[in-house]
Length: 534
Image (cartoon, rainbow, N blue to C red; front, side, top):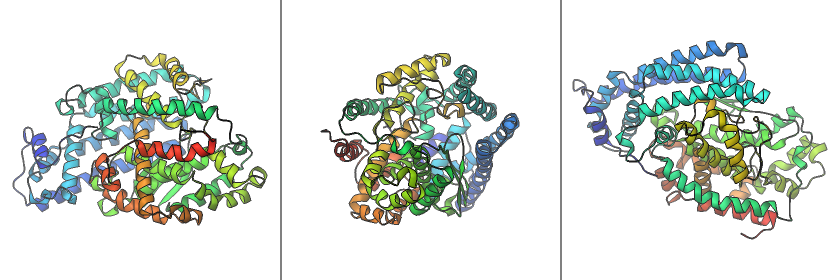
């Protein structure tokens, strides 16, 4: 993937032609003023995050329009603060100061990344920012109702409106800095995975798809299969929550600074220092959905809780990309949570909590069941092997939705065709098909590919952690996870935006990002489980 130029010269190039540099102040005073202004804008973001969390968890449906107006106002104020000409003056002045001589120093990292943010936001009209913020809550509630009623046609007009607004956003962002051949989709993708390009991801995904499709076929036709009924028995909701909270606490989630709630779609949001929220959804007859949903969101939360608090409100105190963020959630959900050693510790507890469902089961039966591979229509419930095929389908669909090549009204049919081709399944309803995800109603186009990048990054990071901590499985079997968390804190979490995503992975693992660790992890786990040759 391409990485755009960075550093002091790039900062000066971006700003000097349009913003005068302030040479009247000492650089340290300029930097302090810059951080004060930026942290005030972060408080507006924090307030928006709290309102969005409340909307998903507690707000009555009738409040959607008013909530949209609240979020639009906050988004406009945030945009105004971060694109104020004074910030441009300060960034320009600091670009050549001694404070940024060391490119890894906090001031250099913050000036570099704030310049990037300033440049992106300055290209977006405030009216567009506000209209998106106003539309998204209404779109979300239309999606909830359409998903409940299984009527994509009710959501289609809102999807059209979101696509139009995101198209305008991409058109405003796209310029020569993206290089020849750049697309509107690249401008949106860059928000979530800095430096990534759709063409590079498409090439990576094509190779991955060619490996995964035949693997799914082999597993589907394997003679050895798990007990598919074991985890679809009756699991009382209060006990599901108890086990999930115990597991979250054991792996390091701090309930003093975080909480767990329920929502239609699981998510994690960082409100501010000491306040992090995760959600899940519970189903009586589906153990995997809630338990691994919690572990997934806990992985996100551990990353946020591992960022250095003194840098909150600056890029150095933020996660570097959604791909790296997803690497943490998938690592804890799959590499740890679906490992045999993890369940050596937690399975006896699960049996005590669910004696009717699990009392007669063995550890081997349960371990096989939580690692069941079954091609199905639902992404959130997908296993490690099929999951990325769900992402590849979405990645391909949202690009043609953005260009208009695929009209929104035709999405259900196009979605079903992708699923038939890649997974051999056909969604029966819109709700289990193109209405299953919240992302597009929230305007998150360009987000989906970061899930697969996260799987690849996570597998590579976990392989490096294993090399550094060869007794990880022994630790997990004892219910000890601090060793792995400490390694991630040191090699990933604390760096914030200090390095670009691919650079961060390379520094932590000793090699450039590669899919080979993910492929090796799948082979090591699933070949013996299903007794197949790879």
